[in-house]
Every structure is written in structure tokens, then in C-alpha cells.
Image (cartoon, rainbow, N blue to C red; front, side, top):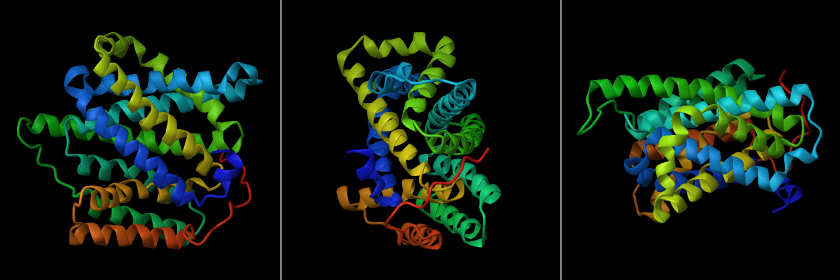
Length: 299
């Protein structure tokens, strides 16, 4: 699908596609945790995605200023830290709890960059929806103890901060143009930065064909597809509105579970879906059919 065609697709629809790919990739990633380890899977996801994106975009053909290099480095570090810390968190915490706490990153972005009551109010409504959809609980479950909870909470707090940085930096990259090409370089930076502690233990994934293909699938579905689509959306909306749209991720998971797995939503999940829908209506994203005028970078 061309960039011009994607620009005609409403932002929520683009992000639903992004979220669907990400959740399918996450399901495949869980099967790798036992054999490779959560941080190592996150690094593999970043490294393989970097190879794919660089081969696709061939960034050496473009002109790179010092400012663009700085943006790519900062963006890449935020991406890598966000992915690794989130995978560590979900290895120690219930997924719903991790998702809800990580959403404090977008909440903070919307609170500080929102330009009116609609954007700031929408993020409050969206956050309530995420909490209801996530089913928050701090019970570590069988095989885990309070130490797991502490490790998980620290990891997810880091992931939330990195997610906030990802939104702000990603908005700058997208607004400057050539966002996906810069994303390719950013992914490479993140992979190189975290290679010293993670590359060697992650190499076990390439000792078996079944592990290797899963790692490639995770990289494509959890990084290449969603981050490329998010660059399309970030170019069209502000950071605060994008933060509200991020509530579509857990909402998408709930809808996919209901339609594909016949998992009937609970009253709390239905209320969460209503909150997310209300937040989108507050920002006008369900009514907007054409992309808004280009806005300048944040910084």
C-alpha cells in the first residue's frame, strides 16, 4: 500500500492494523521466552527489524545532517529501551497490569502537550478505558514472588518513560519527513547499543530453524509493520492525539479476543471499550476522513 493511499485511511484504522500485527507478534514472542529469554527476544526483534528496514529503505542514499543523526540516535535508544524493558516487565507481571502502567507514558505526553480541554480530557477517559480493559492485578501468580513484582514494576516504569520519549521523538522524526528511513537507522542504533549484553545469549535463537523463523516473524509483526504504520500516523496528528490513539492497542486486543477467540467481553471490558471510543470522539478521530494539515515538529 502506497503512502498516498495510507494517508486516506483514518488514523484509528491504521493503528488498529498496527495493533493487530503487534499482538500476533507478541503471541509468537511468548513462545520464545523459555528458550531465549525475554530481554534477548526484545533485542532480536530490534536487530532483525533493523536489517529488514535498512534493506528496504537504503538510508545511505539520503543526505544526513548532524541534527538528523542526533534524532535517529535518540529515537533508536528510546525504541530499544522501551522494547527490552516491556518484555522484562511482562516476564514478571501480569500482562494487563504492565499494559495499564505503561500507558502512563502516553498520559504524561498528552497532559504536557495537549492544546485544549478535549485532548487533555480525552487522555483521562482513554486511560480509564485502558485500566478497565487491562484487568489490573498485582498478584504475581504461581512460580513468582514479591521480588518479581518489584522487578516488573521497575521495568514497566522504565518502559513507560521510554514510550513517552518514543512518541515525542517519533513525532519529530515523522514531521521532518523520511520518517521510515530515519526509523531504519534508529532501529540499527538501538540494536547496536544493546548488543554487548544481549547479542551473545540471543544467538541461541539461530541454532534451531523453529526458533529462527519465530524470531523473524516477531520482528516483522511487532516492529517493522507497527512502527512503520505509526510513522504514518505521527506525521498526521499531534503527540497528544497520538497518545489518546494508543488506547486502541488494548481495545484491539479485546475485540480480537471477542471475534476470533469467542472470548465474551466482561462488563468492565465493555465499559473500557466505551471509554476508548468516547476518547476518540473527543479528539474527532472517528469523524475525520482526511488528514489534517501538516504541523511543525515539537522541538
